[in-house]
Length: 330
Image (cartoon, rainbow, N blue to C red; front, side, top):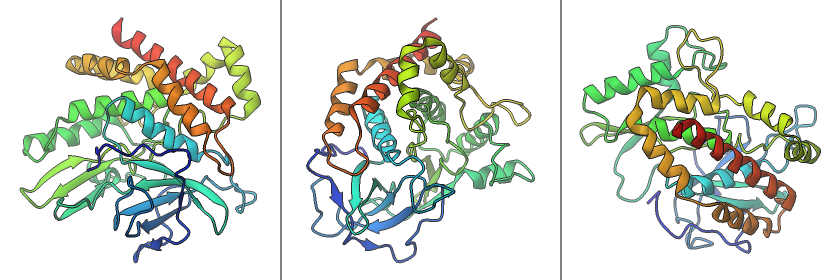
């Protein structure tokens, strides 16, 4: 059901979560930098794209350290939603994300569908990637994540493959993950933002869908900076050059994996993944992206998606796509 059709949310379908019940175990969800509330969709659901009785995370913008009552980047929540829509354009499996508001506080945010607990899924358990990194690397520091690296992830994946526990191709999964993160500029794929879902039927496991994708799409840039980057190729090039995955290739590497070069290096190691990524990048066109962004600018919310930011996100995403294709096709 996570890949179901009919999850397109119209500008007039903003979800008000003020009356939604709080999950019995978690009112404030304990993982991540942004305030999150774990809620339960009521029955009947407010719109057809919501699942009655299913769990959803309501995620607000990151609050200011100086003034916790105010968001540091008030319109950051749009990045989470747009990343989901871009992932869908690529044909990826991502938990649906919707725009929402808590009308009692006039607080906008995203409503992220929990990627487990679907009807018919049976008894499943989720283990974050940090659990596995700690088992493979003595003294692994989950707070800082400096030892997070792709070589150990590949090692873990190979062990699961040899044991015949994995239900899908991990090489394809991680290639798509790196490519998606490079396209949207996601710098936050740390060890808590991936994991494994185990089913007692077997037992067998699958990697999680790509979730928590909001530290992306230039969300941190102020309007003046966006304008300069669209005018000045050198400033844009510097910004793109600084983009890095939230992992190194190997534990001892000094630098994190560069966003675009990291994808190219992965494909040099696993060349059969290269045409898969090229097809996912080419299956959508510029008009698809711009039409999606325009519809989101029509939503009436505090801290709306402005036409300027929508234009910049399109510009940034198309530039990254062109550079990814250049790196993969040459």
